[in-house]
Image (cartoon, rainbow over all chains, first blue to last red; front, side, top):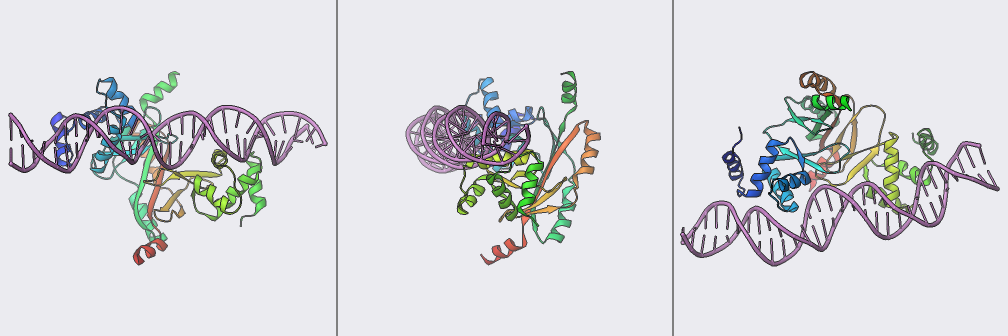
Length: 145
Length: 145
DNA sequence: TTGCAAATGCGAATCATTCTCATTTAGAAT
DNA sequence: ATTCTAAATGAGAATGATTCGCATTTGCAA
């Protein structure tokens, strides 16, 4: 259960100053599965907490650098989505309609990558994997329309 | 072995007009593993075949739409790489240094995705997977430096 | 050969993101 | 509590990749 103090501690432990702006962004990302920088900017403005778009970008960059946040890009979109990172190597299942993001357990790529390494002579440094689909709620909505 | 006629046929079969520009781009992509739009633009200019950057983008878009070309983004890069698509569902092993792109056989994600579908209630529509590493040549070069 | 939709060229426009620089602020040190 | 400094912020300009508008050209089917 997220609390203000937890978030402040997260920031402190990361060596980042605890600012109104960063707190608000962390809080927002806790409510929403994943948002673009611009969506964050606008959501905060609606809450009466307006601050500069460049601050949003900078806050996200510092949070990412400290491992509190990650980003990806939805297929066919030009802007990037940010979401809270929960430790360890995990992949996401992402709804292409509402952008809900579900954390997955396990990774089918690791064994595959090792096999590849042997055959190709590459030194493997990482991989990207995302699975896309329609979440149950959006399946319903699409049926209605 | 690629020949001019093959490429022209590819275009015709895709319902695209056979233009100097599209031919040159296909040819170039056959030589190079993968290139950004701008790299294509400049490579063609060096060959004395200058044409507009927007034409490069449009040609790539139409080739992609017809399934002759795909694109991805290297991690930490802001521009997209284009490469010839060889039929079917395939993934790539990509050198993060020289950007060489190696086609992989098999896909470790399909079974995983089905399992996920059952558990999550999502209708899976696709996935993205890329594996990154250093190719043998670049391992050498890095050792030298 | 003709006709016309498709393709091109050029520059302007757009969009996400980053940068600059003056100002403010968190939090450590006093 | 006050002072001090590096870190963070705000506003807007700058950048860089990509797309768009529109006039012109060009495959290619008839």
